[in-house]
Image (cartoon, rainbow, N blue to C red; front, side, top):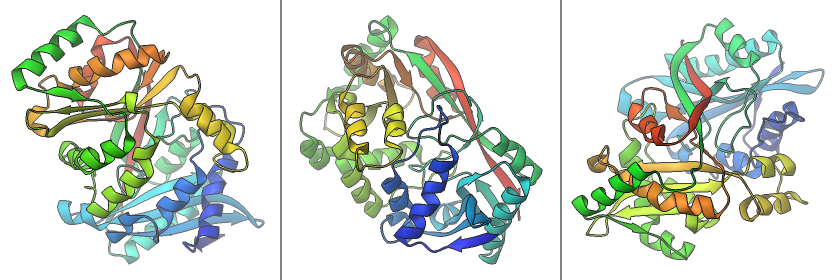
Length: 373
């Protein structure tokens, strides 16, 4: 039986908790922080609802939840592309094709009722939400920024008539003992040629005030032509500044500015929170915060490259080398052995080229699917 879920906090908690329960005991699955996912799904909290519509469905059997799915329409992206696309996301289900069929049917029917002609996903409201169904790397530990799913998901969705829309690939790099010589050479040339410099901050308040908004504006510039990118609005920027910038380890945040102090590049890393989130079970209380604090402050051998963005006028000019010339010594000092790239479109050869100077391997692949309605 399929039920449309009311977007109140109590119902959204059950919607989110289903995923955590489904993967209990799976050593590769990393749960979301429950309150973060609830906030994302809550129309009263998430400013993406200024331009998005959504409906949530859960499947039940004998009174117990056996699946969930969100259907989303991002009007901002549709207006820019001229498409009539719906998205599906936040999707999980037991290994039963009757369950997945009913869930996707509910999402598709809702999309049709809104005049949509196609459905794609898994995608969230914007690019800062989880996206892409895992198709390779099921035995690799996930990250807090990505989806983990069982292998059978892909079999189910293909049986329902969905086909490949786009792929992302992910890499894990070994942190070197020192800055690669070529990176050093390129970084020094770029600094002199374009009169650029690296900025570091010791105060989160200072970085918020001086470059908080500029940081997200740069992301909009750098990512605007990427697949299904939804530019962040001013309300979204305010929201993300409030909830994210306060968590950063400032040693792992590198800004590059020009001679006029205009931001042209950013590199933001964070200690891997994967094991900490697993131990917390996705909950802050009663003791989840202890595990999360240890993840942020304690010993860790893995760092997540959350965000790398370079202004369009400076792309392919070596600014990335400047970012990593600053970050690598911090990685070494903090004891990181491995760095996670997080998802990159498989067609984005420019981004993937920056890893050639490191020992690396592609360890995960994820996919968005499409279906005409």
